[in-house]
Image 1 (spheres, rainbow, N blue to C red):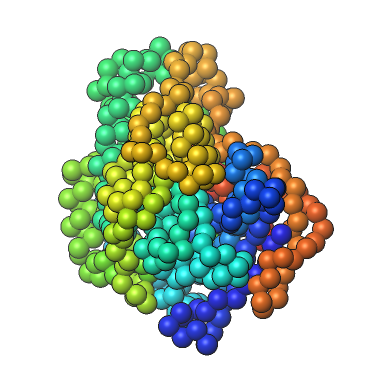
Image 2 (cartoon, one colour):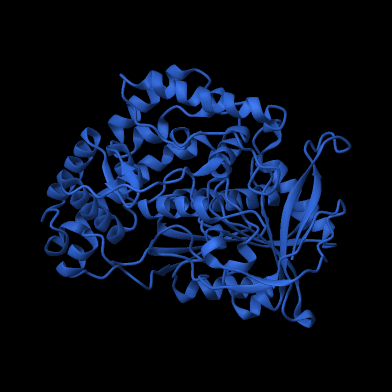
Length: 517
């Protein structure tokens, strides 16, 4: 079922302007076993969450006990979206540092901020994580629940952590998957990605050198790294066309995704092939306002820690580029936040003993392991499950070892956390490919599929939308199915800013296929 509920735009003035939130519910399968509601957020920020109950596969024992609640956060998709009319050129979120083009980067950042302020100036200060947490509490109240349980991925972990800080007595069983350090948002956290990227790059070059017969990128880590940087230089001279996308050298640095070693090797081989025999380009839609403008609304509005002087970004980008050459300039470069309207409140400091379960892969490009460690430190009552050797972004929706299922299912069904933090080994390490496999993938043929959520199925549910002002989620309607092709991308998170090449293609596909309910 789907509905819309009204919430205050400004919780400091609850009797004034309101906005509508799109909310969905899939009821618990066994009323006699029902424990409560499980709200969900897939991350972003900027991602849609209203389809998540229908696309994320959960164990039967969890489905029996919880109503699954999805929602589009304020300012996103069907919940009073912030749409700034950005062009495809303006939707790029990272720009390389070059003294000769820095003024153009400043102009881009200022333009995006001004376009959003022109269209949504009065609304922007209230598109924040704190207000989204308040919206979650309104959803709780509308549903008649004393507490909520929650599953948040990527940015959703920060949203969940903020809720536990603001509403500890209304927090039940919280799963925080692929975590962000809540006390480093946002600029400090994003800049910190560059250090992890260098570690992942070194690991990838060692792994790939051991498989030179398959990838032919070099038989030593140094040769592999040289092959990569040669490709970057070539793409900077002549951008590469691949699978409907155009890749500059900065794009290759940003989207290779070195934490997932085999996918990254296949990306580099394919791009080398495309550079020597360019493939025809196809139309590629922008990431669209809902993703990009929604992202900036939260990241810029949550904390007034972004420098306002462009010269500071110039210094930081130059310094980080020298220290972390892979993506240091990209993570430290100027953003629209330098010119954004200040948020309505200070950043939330998370420091509590509220119970929660944190899940984390060791190798995650989008939310690196130190972020989860920071969240664990801030939430002293939590427990953390680390998948050593695990690769990718989003533990629970992707292939994972049995220890993850055991911890999550036990916690959600009984409320019992592990007695201490848990580390278990990834159950699926990348096997050595054959030379034929590498050649086939480089030629654009079938290769290893990207790691995707196990929820690639169709769920049947009621999809009638209620526009009543009371936000009654007991609305009924015609039964219908929500196909994964149209909505399944909502179960994926786009991460913070770093995105693999596969993730970029998924985001493009989402922009092209997902429609409002």
